[in-house]
Amino acid sequence: MTEIIARREFSPLYIWIDIVFLVFLLTLLILKKRYMTVVVGAFFGLMYMAVDYGIFHLVCGSRTISEGHSLFLVLLWMSISYGFTNFAWIWLWISKDKHLFEWSLLIISWWFCAPLIANTFSSGEDKIVIQRTTGAYHGYMALILITGYAVIIIYNLFQKERTKRINIPWLLAIGILVQFGWEACLLIGGIRSAGFENFSDKISTLVVNSLLETNLGMPYIYLIFIEYSRRFTERLKKRDKTLSFTECIAENNSLKVKT
Image (cartoon, rainbow, N blue to C red; front, side, top):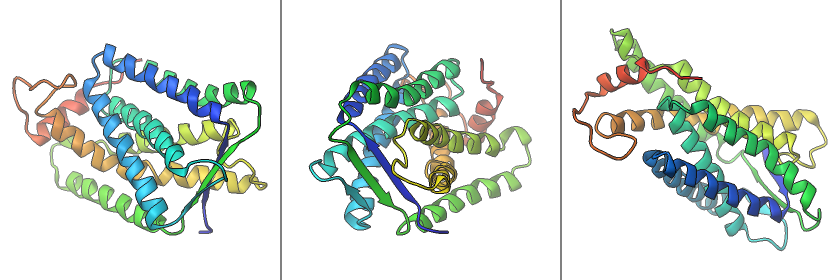
């Protein structure tokens, strides 16, 4: 596989309006008492920063940014923004939140509209261009992905009760579609892969990132969800009865997504 370059180009206004949206989303989640969703989003936002700045930049040296802009501050915003939004959304998906459609529409609509708003109301000057190469670490990410899915595949193979098997297609759908929604909206908005001449280069970034980057964490975040949910509720309260690990899987499988 040739080198995949993840590149974004956007105005400083895009950062500021996205921060406003993040505050709005955080407020809505708190008002609707999605407390654990907020905790998960905040934790993984910080983890994104540790990975992006600590590993991708400091260790691998794969991050670059246009002159005149702070790599640390831009990465801090990017990590908090997409780390929080992605994993809050993933947690809502896994828990099969009764308002999943509304949360999903809100997030996807913002990802689509934000670049259009920023492009219309910004001066078009002083664009921030940030990119990373992936050759130094995609193999490690692939190893994490295959290990996680291998574990849950083996679990399912030896789990005789169908109701207690992990719904792997559901995890794949979440892991791929969340990243795809983000990448596709950025691509349509002219932020992702801006400046690439070949359409194939733009699509390869979209496809590879969608299959790999968020999806690699799905088995692990699902196991964390089950381990937490068998003891505590979304509102951070202890359950009346602690479930076994497999009982909690069966309980989650019994829930249906409402539209």
